[in-house]
Image 1 (cartoon, rainbow, N blue to C red):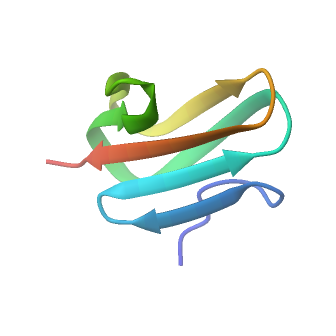
Image 2 (tube, helix red, strand yellow; image 1 turned 180 degrees about the horizontal axis):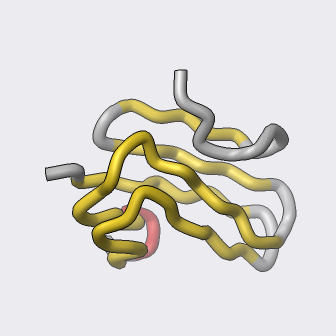
Length: 73
């Protein structure tokens, strides 16, 4: 098992996707299991969230769900 976030955030991961749901606004750090070449937010018009990193920070003004596609190679 890999701890993507701190407790209190819903995360469901099935390679290459990570679903993240938060109930409140804030800053949410996500630790990936390996360095990703690219992380794309599917629900945000396939916007690139990060590149060449093993962690990202998701920002929300309120309740939000992200579907991320993580490309490791």
